[in-house]
Length: 611
Image (cartoon, rainbow, N blue to C red):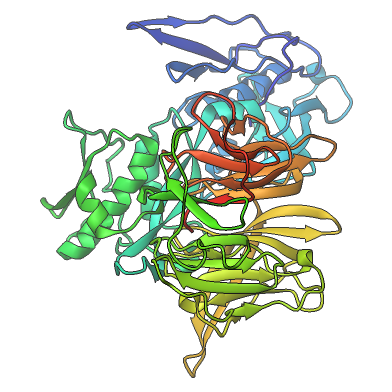
């Protein structure tokens, strides 16, 4: 339990900040704690760069209850690896029972405090405080983040030892609680990687990796934390659709407390005997998982070596890992696509700047014979699916010269354009997804390899009508914009594929969760990384904004982007190095790094990358 604090409140001795600059370490002192009265807010640790370390301070002799609780809350926001200093504020029994890793509760402004009952503590041997606040997020024992709301209220009880006469906490809630800014300073979101159970990249036969975002303590050996987390397996939300290359029970050997790459950026990871007899192929899968995972912590790791049973099992570098598994964020799109003023599909180089020209896409969707409302290009850029201008018909064709349009593969019976087909989207297997917004029969549909008949996708517990669909590169997750009573929500679901006893396929979207709970209007969305999306939306009473969000609902610290108005579409790639584009009333826009939006073309209705 830690806290964001009011900047005008008194400072406590709960922690000290160490500033490491040019090899010199300065330990900051702290003011004294008031001896009487209720707890008051104290300042948050200022946001600093990664060189700043915050260390906990143990309780001083004869500290009153208020100082004990305050020091404990402060110690939880420090960089103490095992919360050992925080445990010094607890009785021996409470310290043994307390499990700080079980749950992290994030509050909007940190916990407020008030005395739990009347009576002067000077004359008694027990006292209590109630911690209060407004919840914004929870991080569970699997390190998985989820947005939260509602009031927080928990009791911390203290007792005074009859012999030493020192106050200590003897009853407290499991886990920790801290304010949003302390959480952002202490924790960082990183991806661990598993393999999609039922998905391979179309044409390659390689397994697709799926990002499983978790939060780790940023300055408490995050590399070793991530290795342990990866070996422990995927989070419960993702587990039904992924597999791990590691044999069940694989772990770091006892006594391994830290992992460090050598001067060649090679990391050797020792494993217990569960991994001692694996084959070369399985070992390379394990090494690829570790390499992708650790590169999300630090890009400097270039090679992974695995050891077990007293010998090296295998080693894998960055280039070799690409031959073991597909990863969405490493697939650089060749072109950016958009629909021009003649309602044709056109394209320009994906690394476009203001000087690049756009050309019609070869084939039926680029020749202007069919006016288009929206288009999706397959991830291999060899096929495309287009929705006619009236939103009623869906066509699938190849992107080669001379290709014909043919008959539509899907028709909507919606009475108006806004009640017909959404923009389609392709998954990693080459299957096509689209939603029919017909109020009389709203459906999410899947066309295998882009061909009819369409399979209706089950959407249990979906509350509202789907307005937009975007499948992740891994084919295991899907982003849906869902409209209910005029408000739009961005939801992320898990794609589950099964077959019945007769081999008939069934596809469903399970456990939808909010990725942008603060938004009540969502105008456009696109995947922008292995676990990141860019969304154009509006909060209640706010203005339209462009921002990054995580698939688990977390907001990256650098999530805000320059604003736009009247946005029609947003084009981002899972490859974070690809430029960001959008369309609005001003045409096709481009966002160069570190500057505002620039107009490339004055006329364009929809822009997108393959997928």
